[in-house]
Image (cartoon, rainbow, N blue to C red):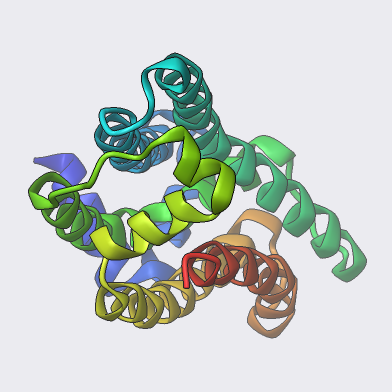
Length: 222
């Protein structure tokens, strides 16, 4: 119940949420849970997609395709935590130019809450994606097709996931990015004891870079 109340306050009053949190000891369990759930959703989507595609691959390539797919699943899972570290390091470092004070562990904790919007977004987009993937009738791929057209897998993926879903994901991504930026600005303000304008500037740079990467990941499917 307490965790639910915390999340509701993070949504409705992030400034008050972090103002209260900084009076308590640093605890990474709650933001780590957010990152874990987000990573699980991303990895699940990747796993289901790879499983579906591997079934239509030529028998000689099926094993290698599955291995590559599983590596991708693990990379997706680890990637969320890697991005958490990278964003926290960048924001912590940038805030030093504005004479920010406070240890990195606190910054790392507070920045973790900024992935909550991504979790909410994934709870919307992943089920939609899984619906199309699991209900798709994928034609078998031959070695000849792969030799003649190396992009045949990309073509099939586009036939599974309609462009309308990709465009809707882009719109959701813009909303999620703006929401994350808001949370990260308040998080950095209280974690480092700097002004809101300065916190926004420090949060804006890595957020834009993160958003560009996410948009690129979506657009490369088109």
